[in-house]
Length: 343
Ligand code: ADP
Ligand code: MG
Image (cartoon, rainbow, N blue to C red; front, top):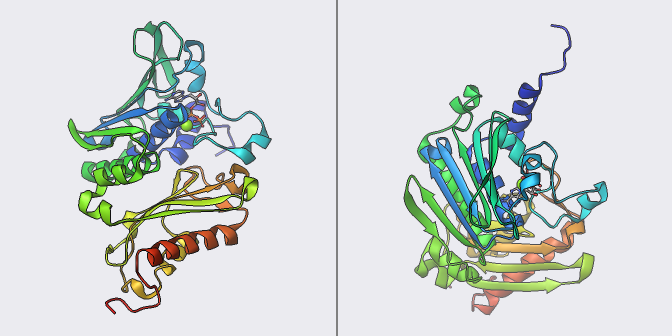
């Protein structure tokens, strides 16, 4: 076949595939946008594993009516303007790819009202094509409904797992953000059933109770350590389990860098678990909800399109603060990490 430039729709679908792998990716992107918009209350609803519909409602700053179409254009973002800004990213989003990617592979209705605007606006867009835009009465904030995800890319749809597995992945995304942002009130409704609700009172342990129950949450040890300042700041805050409270997987290890979720693997997970020294039995893992704060310029989040991996400028320092903070919490709780369990 001769070389040809792809038509715009196909190119958009391919690009969308990098950002939107499954329904949970949609939820992640919409929740991040709501958080970036300063929302204090976020309601996530999913039906049919998120394929039939995902709806995310927030009370954030909204999108001005004359910008709503632009928000769905590729590489359109209000969060980054120069290449230098890339080194000081303080928002969760910055690529301007989520909304266009979602709109390329679903039927989207965006209802939004900017702070200070008298009325809102409704935009309907499907398969990347704007279908309608009209004024609409609504409360301040943004509601985005994503229906029939992958309706025009059936192959991707066929690769998905069961509705239950996709719903579980959605739950895990919302859980992560509910733990990273305890000051935001999160609700999750799956197939009409309220499955998760945090109070948004700002207390991490309170949010943890909603997710792991009172019995587990009350046993967790508080971590609060900070070293350096400015670009050298490394702060570690959160909760970790005492040695007696373990899990068979790392599923209850929630790690955040500047409140952005990262996978509980690699060096960070190793340093965390090594802090328990001999206290963890083979094959057992601690629970942890830890946010590591570093200066935005000391971390590179631009490693992967879905942004779940990061690179630190000073990895050694971050790891040493983390390890020490966890060991200190264990010691202060009366545990002596050099003793054998049960001694
Ligand atoms: P990014 O988040 O990388 O900027 P997106 O495609 O996710 O890119 O969003 C594009 C733009 O649309 C954002 O920069 C923001 O200005 C606006 N936007 C998206 N979602 C919301 C929301 N829930 N509330 C307010 N503005 C939003
Ligand atoms: Mg975004």
